[in-house]
Structure formats: C-alpha cells, structure tokens
Image (cartoon, rainbow, N blue to C red; front, side, top):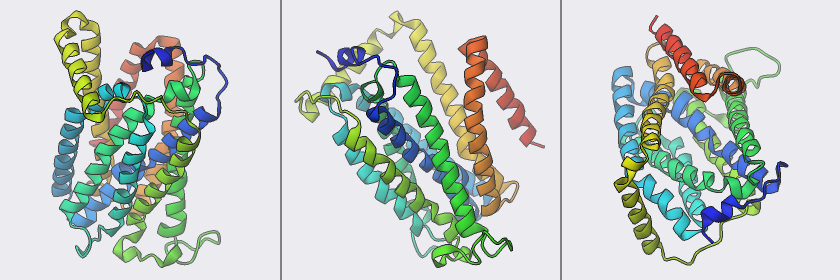
Length: 345
C-alpha cells in the first residue's frame, strides 16, 4: 500500500488526539523564527544597526532572500516528491531541526561593532535556516493527516496557527518586559535592569531573540518526536528515492497541459505567496529604516500584529463560509493593498 493510500484510509475521528496536539505544538515552536528573526526584531536590527543604512540594508536582505528563494525553488520539489518514496519523515525532520537550532542560536553573535559574525556570515546563517525551514515545513505538513486523522486535520491545523501566534506573542512580550523596558520606565512590575545583565548598548535585547527562537523550536520539537506517528519506512535507499522523485516530477511536468486548472492555480498561488512573503519580510525593515523605530516600538508592533493575525484567521474563516474562498481572498487582498498604500503617507 502506498503512503498516499494509507493517508486516505487514516482514521476519520473528529476528536483531536495526542499525535495531533504534538503536531500543532511543533508548529507553535517553529513559527517564532519567522516572527522574531525574519519580520520584527532581528532582520530590522541587521538593517538598522549592523549595516546602518536603510537602503543598503533593504538591498542586502533582498539579495539574501532572493538566493534563499532560488535554493528552495530548485530543491524543495525534490524533497516533497522523494518523501513518499522514503516513507518515514522523522529522521529527516530530526536532521533538519538539529541544524536549525544551533544556526539560529549562533545569530546571537551578530554584534553591531563587527567583532562577532560579519554581515555576510549573519545572512548566510539566517538564510540557511530559512531554507531548512521550508524543508521542515514540507515534511511536517506531510504528517498532518497521519497525526490527527482526516476528521480532525482541520482542528490540528487551526490549533497550530493559534499556537504559532501565541508563542510568538509570549516571546515578544517577554523580550519587552525582561530586556527592552527595564531602565526606560518606572513601573513596579518591570525589572530595574535588563535580566541576565544584557547590555542594550550592544543591542543584546534584540540579539537575544535568536536564543528565544532556538529554544522554542527545541521545546516544540520534543512532543512531535515523542508522540506524532511517523510514516512507515519503505526501505528504499536515499539516492534511489531521490531519483524516483525526480522522475515523478518530470512526468508531472510533461503532462501538465492535461491539468490546466491545477497548473493555473499552482502558478497563481506561487506569485500570491511570494507577494505576501515580501510584505512580511520588508515590514520590519520598513519600520526601522523609514519610520526610525527602535527595539521597543518593534516589539510592540510585533505583538499587536500577531494578535491581529489571530483575529484575521477568524475573519477569514467567516468570509470563506459566507462568500466562498475566491471572493474572500479577493476582498482580503484588496484591503491589504489599501493598507499598504496608506503606508506611503
């Protein structure tokens, strides 16, 4: 029996089980990398403090994102096509997570005075983790039905979205309370000095998010490897699995003209997701470079937008049910364009 066939026969129980919860927790531990590193705190710090020039910072980050995107585009389809040939996913996930955690934590040494990681090394580490994040996402998503069952897959997916934003909000709030606010406000519930002796003059309150993101990824990984069921191994050697996956991709490309609707959808979705990712990646850099926001403003910005992201999930679900997915997406894109245009003012 093929892996796809086994997934199709997965239990249809609508109750979320332990494997489904573990799958969702992993998503919660993984998403803070995007929020803390890519969007709101670390990359804006690189552009504003390490590079020190908003225009050059945007250019540097754009080039790095471009190379990471090309790497994912060239390799991710083979990862996905080969996963079914190999069967088990957990070993691959363990290797990927085992690389992501130390590389993310190492970003702590991206010092503003240049005595730690250089800007090129910092971007190399961050973009390597971003590519690994894409591989991680492919293998993790392929375990959804096996982890939660067909009947509860939507519950696990929704819980994962909520946990990703919840963990990110908690990490941002803790960073603000423990490192950014001390010494700037005279509030009884805020420490007098940054915890653990962090030096804000060296931007340690911004660099510390690297350790937080790495720690949350480690925390979120433990339940997945303990309780989420893996696909059975096929016994196919790695090289043969990649060769079979490549052959399957080639056959799909040769017959794509027979599936025009699917091809149009995949292509349009690719452009849509690229545009959405561009907005997310440059939001923080824009705030630092154009509006001259500091770490505390960026933390507040990240907290507010993460909370609105959760609310947006509920609104999107209501629009989908009332108007259909295509109309809902059209309205959401239009409102996003209005909001982005307002930024120009």
